[in-house]
Length: 153
Image (cartoon, rainbow, N blue to C red; front, side, top):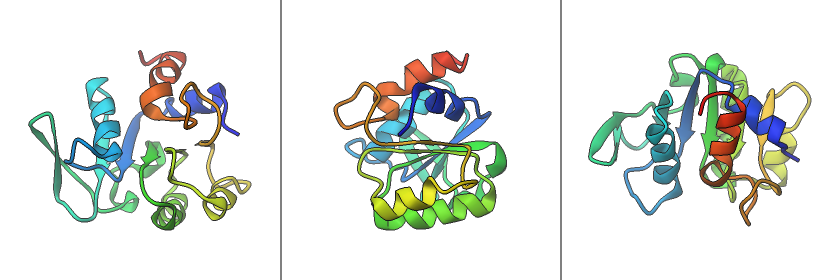
């Protein structure tokens, strides 16, 4: 299970990415991406179907996958995808050297967790029960406290 220390470790990264970023304000990929932008964090939206996403009237260039991040080894990744897609994202993130991941509620199943939590896969995995929200660890609910603990807020 994730802990406050795990969430703090996630936010110790110099940059971030949101897999599943969207221009649709009703989608959590949009809300999470906007959350990072509102806190002036260096964040890259990941969306293979669109060259850019719009948040609050501003366009943000996307990358198609985590391998295309400028510096994946310095990037913590928030994931907002269906578990069937998440597993592929995790495999690619491991290969690219991503240190930490945050699995938003609804993004994981047993297969995803088995891979994500395997010894040596990631330095920090934030997921599941805990945090302050009723659905478990969520950037939108728990992010500010973890950012503050990491000295970034």
